Image 1 (spheres, one colour):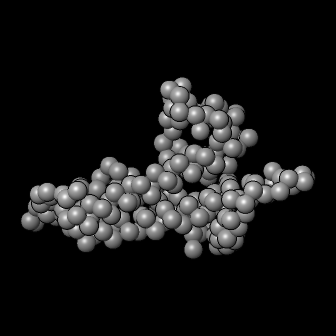
Image 2 (cartoon, rainbow, N blue to C red):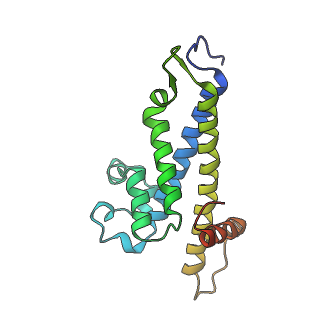
Image 3 (cartoon, helix red, strand yellow):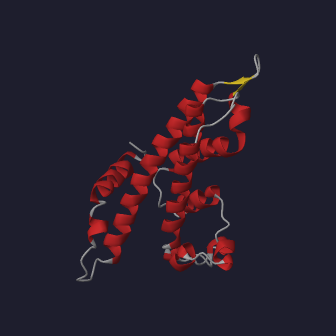
Length: 181
């Protein structure tokens, strides 16, 4: 399908915006998934009813429970001191919110009423790259949670979980540096 008459932005820029949005949704989905497995969130009023079953369920009731913002999810990770990369989460959230709520305002050129495509592209590529790093970080985090939960069992890791061992190494390196690398 060919886009017609998008005078305000070229097709490549629009595609990068779409890719950046999807990458942000993946980060939000993974963050929700991780948090739903935390046992110690049950005393948090906002998260009391969140569980792995609610996270995966598509019912109206479960959707209502999953009304948290990405900012609330990141805050919980930071408050529980399980994220280790607090500044990066804050920076990512700020940029994600610009993408979602303020993109046109942020990149609008006042002098000739055009969007600065090159700045938008750079911004979107940065978000996509950071999203990819966060995804690897969270996969490594998930791997660690899996290892902890199986510590005193004879259960063998499913092949799919074993395949994210590289992300675990990335996760450990990020923790050591307290930053995404």
